[in-house]
Image 1 (tube, rainbow, N blue to C red):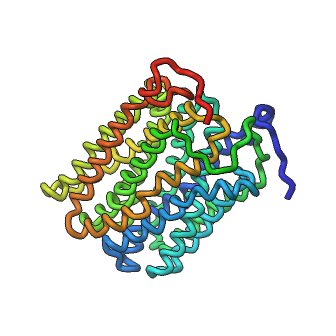
Image 2: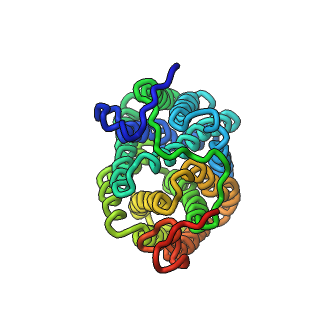
Image 3: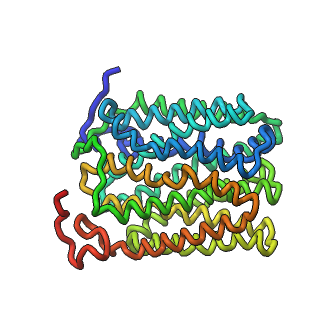
Length: 413
């Protein structure tokens, strides 16, 4: 298939539905149809069909995060394949692996398909982040990223709404739902591959491993984000099923509330990041997460009820939407040619803790679930301390508050 290449500067002449932002929005809509459905059914699926306990779910998520740790491999692939093509192919892999999940209700099959879907998810996310930062103008990036988050939330909301409306009414099986969700994601990805030209950003990307001293704060924030997020992703929803006995439709309804809130507030969050800056946005996020994780611990220490737990889960998820500020912080400090390789490196850094933390904390969960959330609160405090080091107006050469009072040219490396 011959690829039609359109320079980014000429993309404005295309119809609105074929412009780069439209493609980013469509891909952002497609991914959660598969991933959100997989997530909504996962805890009930593995407990009901495979008899998982806390240690098993920890191992599953460790396997799921290995491709994230290996996201640096994107650098090697884009030597031979365009980023945009790689992103769509990864999205197809995510859809197909999700579609097959329900046919293998045992620990071996679940782990293999989790690995395959995770390769698709993490490689898509790596390339998608790179394309967003290359294609979006810096002055509008926070607002457009807010729209993109809202599009993903709308897709999740649609998937969850259909689950709630049809799961019990039609007595659906796990296999059927996974096939429909994964197949829809894959079909949209194929459309993205065939209907859109290849957009050429003005700055060619370096196709080698890049680690720069001046990005150290971004790397540190990514590491802490990955470690902290794992506790939320792995154990917060698992708590709802194991501790409070939530059924599929209840978990899904909770997810619906999450993504409805995200769909409504993500554009406002993007505006707030543009208005108040990355440092204030991230400090607010980390302070809020610290309080939420301490409250999660209180559920086990003081016997607080399911309604509070559900409310905390929604607030927790909303705080994570502020993470778009980390993307725009990097966009402001990065050399244009560093965006693709650093996106891959940052995903690997983000997943260093994710490879071992879920399995290790799965065993701690068996002894003291509240301690798992207390550890997450401590991680949020460390992240808050790091966020204080972001300048009010970060630029190349002024990446941290220690890099000088006045912005200066980025040092040669």
